[in-house]
Length: 560
Ligand SMILES: Cc1ncc(COP(=O)(O)O)c(C=O)c1O
Image (cartoon, rainbow, N blue to C red; front, side, top):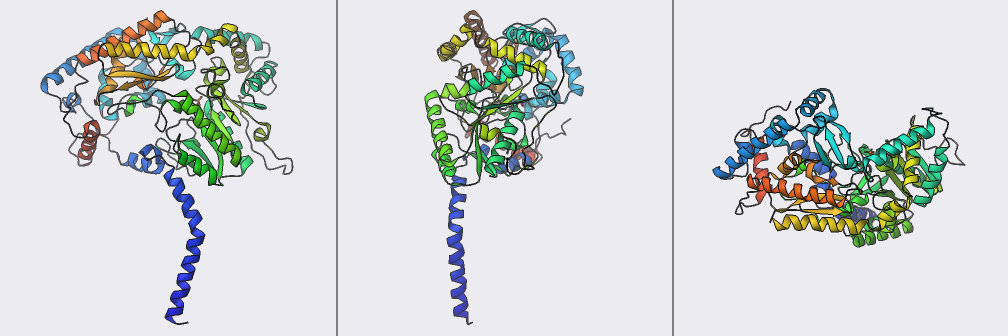
């Protein structure tokens, strides 16, 4: 074979493999295009960037002047900070002392304490602005700390508190009474389980139910079953969506394992539909409908608040239309659609997000409020998808059991919950939910606008986020001003406010007043000063800081 023949052969082989590779390359390209352009949309890159970020901190004078504020503003901030520190310490000495003691040995607290505000500020804040996280009493919508300070509860117990804490106390008491004669006997089912299964089948419109111990577990089981029945390798979820702490649904930062079987795609985007239309390896599509509030962005939290926070309020009709399109493509391609309603189920409607957005899923997860105050995760699904074995291959099973599944006490409290949500007044309250909460949102925003404050709220029904118009490096300070006004927040601070539906108009009016008072004090203390001429604003400043920390010219002690 001479050189000319050889070249011709190589060219022919290359053309052949290019032809073979073309569909693969096209599919790969379509997948890349369907990833959200942000870092959150690129899990692997986000993990690499996260590993490169050095620890550094702002202490002393720099704490108050990272944005180059003039001396008079820095002085106001310093005085304001000292006032806050004194108020927080004087207000709740027992609560703060107990929190400090707990922090020694409770890993959860060590973690949340370190990530309450952006990390460069965290140590100084933890040392001087004590946040007490212990409580001794609660009413429907308030919690009281160990020093007797009653605060409106805007944390909503991570979403559990839809109907007021007394409602859940009552569900637990009633539930315990239902099953007292059996007690914690695991294995046999108490008769209340039959009622729960029947009710959940009716509410979800699905054939079967399985009980788990947390929302995370219910999601694990949903995805595992979808893989088992489709024989496909990957699941699709949307950028920023939270589905619990299982590493199978956390492809990005926060998960030490590299998860290779997740396609994290753009929410509300035709490019994603194209991927679903063509790929053959998609086992299921997993949707957290709370993303309607901030599509393609992670849940807002103060630890990552480094400038403005712009969130658009949820548009129910647009998101419903998107879910409808997803439903269509999933049906056409025989891809199970999973609606993760752990957060929203029973908050938006009796029939949950399926009813609220008018979509029918193949698998639905519930949790939080459904346990009537006790821990739970629930999966409902079609008979075909819920089956954990194959008739023709006896050892090919999809194993899922758990010691505490269907725990009698949890089943009792759930039974009381499911009974009580059918109370006519409670059922009727869902019909006015949107109107009530949109009016409250408008009222809150009007009060903030009336004082020309640079914040406003965005929300999906009773789940709100504080948005900041000013790209200040200190927006997260608002959480401490809110606390001193008697407003209790969860560890994500102003990122998530969760209201109970039994909050009265009078109490809501008091909350508006307190938010306005907190924001006025924060403005007075100079935290919203911003240099309008600063090129690139807060983002550029932050980048400069990180580079300086790398170069060693910024204080970078070891974190303890
Ligand atoms: C949508 C969603 N899925 C799953 C989970 C995890 O539930 P759990 O914390 O009970 O494990 C959560 C928790 O916030 C959630 O909001």
